[in-house]
Image (cartoon, rainbow, N blue to C red; front, side):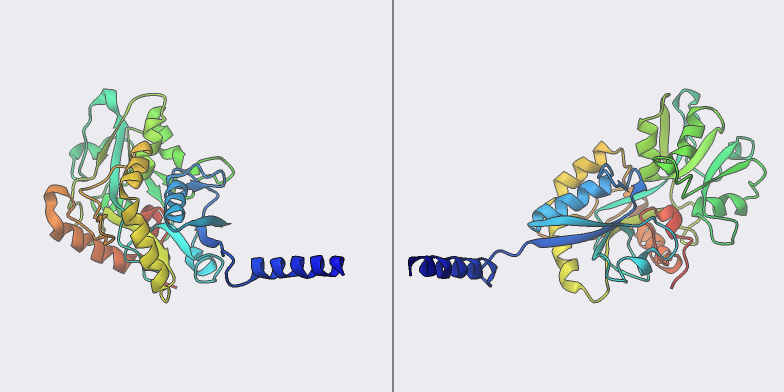
Length: 317
């Protein structure tokens, strides 16, 4: 009789633990590239890994990753296929996902050896016609990075060396090659998406200068600056709202992360303390330029990647 009572008590405890009163763990399912520093890697060493962790902490959730190399079709194969719910670091204005308001704004930058004091900040600098210039490339099709198009429009072609956005994926941090080429003297100047430029320049064996492209480079035709937020499925308004609130709550911590990784930013990031985020002016050039560039970005970006250097080349699905 006593053993029966004990068994019944144990069953009731088990039911209570599994019933509606039990705490249900929230999971933030995040898509990320396992080998894409400074943004993300499987070891969690990228700044987007750290920002995802901050968002999850604010939501009292744990992060569960779906690892997928960022190539064309990334959104279709991950978020839209319901393998994950959020993609950190998406250029605002993409056609395939809904995006939160931005948590930073960055731009392409010229990377040079600091000792040479070149101080190049414009595609119209005449020295670009004689220097060996490295530029991030997508491939040999007509869609390429904005700097590649900007150089070609000016007839700067023969002295340009292309470095693939995706790099040698068999190596760690495949996007580092273009910055390393400046450090070792293989090229004189590189034009690199800001977060990549800032991160790898800090880790170069010689001092490197990182100078954001002076806006407007080519106006709204080929934007050089992008607002960056988080991407979710278009019908997931609740998650978008939760993430925006978390980003706002963690604003100061996010700024520290971006500082730690050397991410160059333009103007304020628009992370309001009250939970509302908004695109802000891009420095002295004013909000009109920033808004025009972002509208152009929305037209050009299809299945965006964390790196808007690649985002502008990808076709709508």
